[in-house]
Image 1: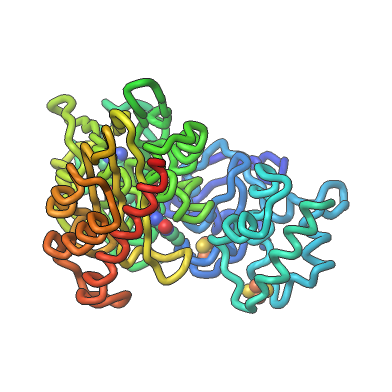
Image 2: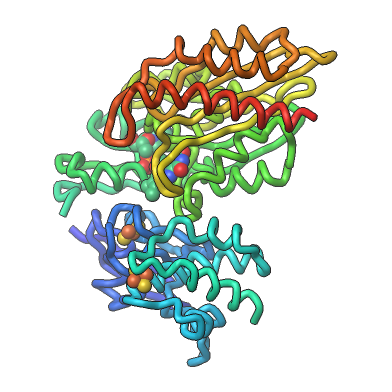
Length: 153
Length: 289
Ligand SMILES: Cc1cc2nc3c(=O)[nH]c(=O)nc-3n(C[C@H](O)[C@H](O)[C@H](O)COP(=O)(O)OP(=O)(O)OC[C@H]3O[C@@H](n4cnc5c(N)ncnc54)[C@H](O)[C@@H]3O)c2cc1C
Ligand code: FES
Ligand code: FES
C-alpha cells in the first residue's frame, strides 16, 4: 500500500503516492524523472545522490521518503534560475571538472552548501566540504578548482 | 529490493505514542536519521522487518547550553551539535569538535545523536568523544525515565543495554570543571571510512598537575568503546610531561582487546592505539596552554 506525501521539489509542489520502503532518491528519479541525483552505491558511500533538504545537503539514498513529508528539496536541476546557470555549473564547465559526469550533480550540491555557509573557502575547506563525494575519474584537482572559481564569481 | 516486508511506517508526534507502538510490537524498529539502518538494509539484514517507527516528529531535536553543560535531544543531528560546539569555541569541548569533523557533511546533516549511540558501533567516532566527556543519556520506557552513564549503554558489538520498548530521549554533557581540555584522534584509511582506532582524551589541570584524566578508545580496540584506567592512573597527579604521556600511551595496551577485521589486525590496532593515545594526549596538552 502506497502512502501520500507532499514535497516541494525545485520550487514546485507535488502530491505523491510513495511505497513505504521508497527512498527519496527513488522518488526523485523514478517518480519525478529528475536524473540529477544519481544512484551509485545506494547506501551512503559515494555522494552522487546528494540533494538539499531544507537547504542542507543529504544523501537522498539514505532517506526514507515518508520521513520527508512536507520537505523542500533542491536537486541539481534546481540550480539554474530562469535558464541562467548557477556559478557552480559555469565553473564546473570552465574548469573541465567533469569527465564521465556521474559524480557532478552530487559534487555541486555538496559544494553549494559549503558556499552558502562559507562564501570564500580555502582549498582545505573545499576538500573537507566535498569529502563525502567520490569521483572515480579522479578529477578532484579540477573539481576543487571549479569550486574555488565559483566562490570568486 | 530490501525492506520488502515493511507494512507499517509510523510517524508519531509524542513519546507516549512511540512507547505504545514499541510495547505492542517488540519487532518494531526505531528510525531516526536512518543512516545506520539503510546500511543494514543494503546488506540484506532487515528483510523481515515489518514496522518502522520514525521518531523525528517528537520535537526531541533541541540543544541547550548553560553553565552546567550541554543538554541535547536524541534526534538532534550531528550538524546541529557541531554548530553549537563551534559557537562555544572552548578547550574543554575540543575532543568533541574534532570528532564531529569526521563524518561527511551529508551524514552530519542526517544522522542523529541518539542513533549514533544506540547503534553501539565501536567504529563510530562521536561515541568515543562523548565517553571522554562523561556523557549521560536519558532513557524513557513504559516504567518511566532513567539515566545511564554512556559506557554502560554499550553492551557489546552492535548491542546496546536498552530494554525492549525503551527509547533514548536525550543526552547531557556535563561542563568540565576547572581548567580542562579535550582532544580526539582517528586513524582511518581515508576520510569516508570507519576508524581503525580512535582515541578521545580529557585532561584537567590544577596548580601544574593533572587533577583528572579520561582516556577513551574506540574503533575496534574492543567490542565497545572502552576507557583505559591504567592510562588515566598514570596521568592523574603527573605533570603531563612527555614521559607521562608516553607511559600513558604504552599503558592502554593492557586495557584493550582489539578485534581483527578487513581493516586491520588485532596486533596492528594494539600498536597504533599506543601511538594514537600519545599523540591525542599531546594535542590536548597543547590546548591546555
Ligand atoms: C557514509 C557514512 C560515513 C560515516 N562516517 C562516520 C564518521 O566518520 N564518524 C562517525 O562517528 N560516524 C560515522 N558514520 C556513522 C553515523 O554516525 C551513524 O550512521 C549515525 O550516527 C546513526 O544515526 P541515525 O540517526 O542515522 O541512526 P538510525 O540509522 O536511524 O538508527 C541507528 C540505530 O539506533 C536505533 N535508534 C535510533 N535512535 C534511537 C533512540 N533515540 N532510541 C533508541 N534507539 C534508537 C535504531 O533503531 C537503529 O538500530 C558514518 C555513516 C555513514 C553511512
Ligand atoms: S548513491 Fe547515495 S551515497 Fe551513493
Ligand atoms: S567525473 Fe566521473 S565520477 Fe567524477
